[in-house]
Length: 117
Image (cartoon, rainbow, N blue to C red; front, side, top):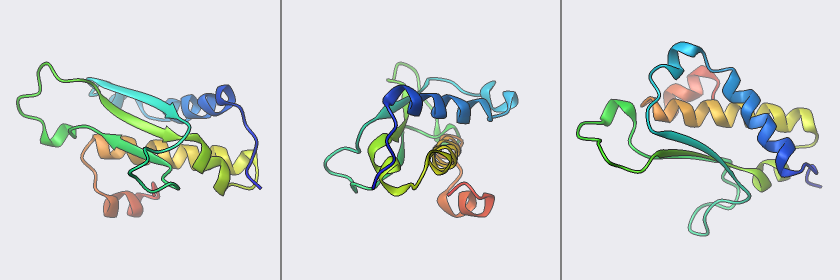
């Protein structure tokens, strides 16, 4: 049975995870928004927990005038896979750090090695 948690509580966990990111990383962030969505887009895996949508900092060249990059954290799949609120908090933390890593151009293999997968 999925964990029950309202959107406000879930968004608070996302904010807590963002607070763990060191200031020296935030100083490099440009044109990024972090959003909570209930579910992934219909054309994606339904159990996807998060997604980075944008151009990683390491790949930017002529980047002026574009919409913000997005980190999306999907509430329903996260709640469905967890047994309790503590597990939700940990999964949100890992998801946020993982997607934030993609923003900085870190690939999945490196993220797994760092424990952010």
